[in-house]
Image (cartoon, rainbow, N blue to C red; front, side, top):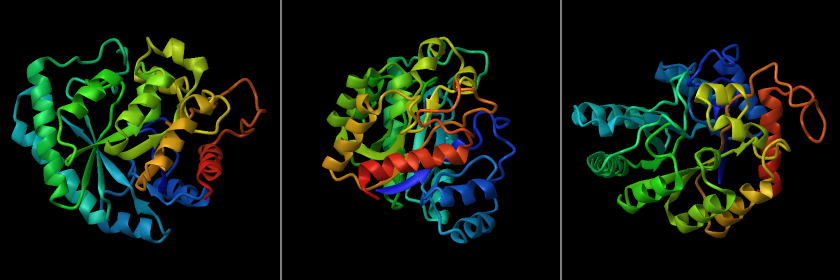
Length: 312
């Protein structure tokens, strides 16, 4: 597996003021220092392609993927929506990446600070399901013809969030074109029990083409069911694997890791846990919680977890 970490561990793409004091140079330096091979681009990374390439290459890092938020289910101007996706694929080709991670964001509420991320999200009708799956197949085929892999990301606050919705999407798209970005914590926050999450991963193991590995804090999870995504992030809903404040890793993450090894998964394994806002008081240091809970400290915890489970 290629081991990456997202810049969202330092600064948040949905809410850029969180961690905005971390420059992209610091993020890249600490990505390397923590022992990772790269990650996706962040909101403060250079948009000038040669500058981005130089920043990555000088540190021996790679771009794992980029986020492509689609708007396929509006039923309006599908050509423009598809053109936006094509632009993302071209960018990825230019930076040497091979994965494009997609989520349908039409009418999504994850970026709206006042709406419940679980209770006020869009729910698709039959026509919208047809638009989504049909255009995802087209997008996936377009990506594959250019040496890219489309991986769909179930995401809280969007129309594909639950295990049932994820299964419907996978069952109605072409496995040659549409893979699954398995995001352990988004599925968990979106309502999946640990057993259901592991069951989904096992059922669709052959469709997993990208992994976002992170955990949830049970001390936040119950209250966060009524929160906006902004409130949930500010409360520390997500954390890295290996953090003792997350759910017992044996409930979810260890079986998922074992399954991925069992099936010979060899693509990107990316740590993705939105930055813990500072100051953050997790009831005091101890039991493995870093005394100085910086993004770098959590990145090192995550890298230690991967080393323990993978042997490298």
